[in-house]
Image (cartoon, rainbow, N blue to C red; front, side, top):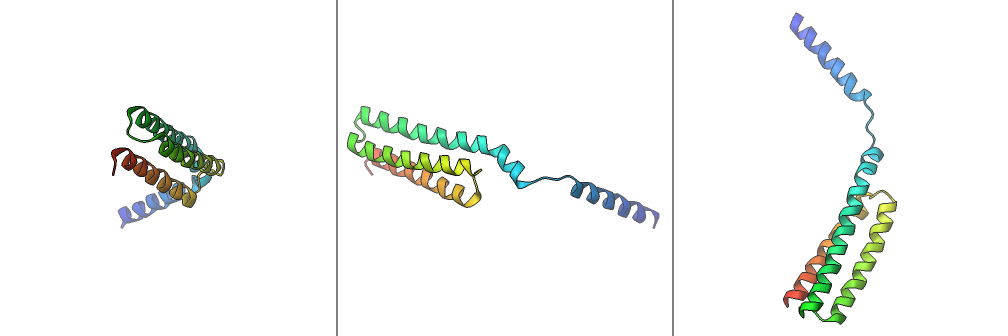
Length: 113
């Protein structure tokens, strides 16, 4: 019985410590924001470079690449807006989908599919 009492006391102390350490979602988000911002900026930049290379190699027409670049500019503006708000979950998920789908469309256009 003595060990059980000690164990209950230990668990109570650990739970008390766990709940006394404040961790706020805002703190976690603010730490992740620069990483997410850099991630999306880099992906957008890479797609622009991919389009430039595609045009220079003749894999995609300049007009088609310009259309994609306009979409990339729109996505970049959206990313800037979401970044300013701290990357809330729903808009960030939508941004991720848009960036991924746009990348797939660019790749398909350059491969002739």
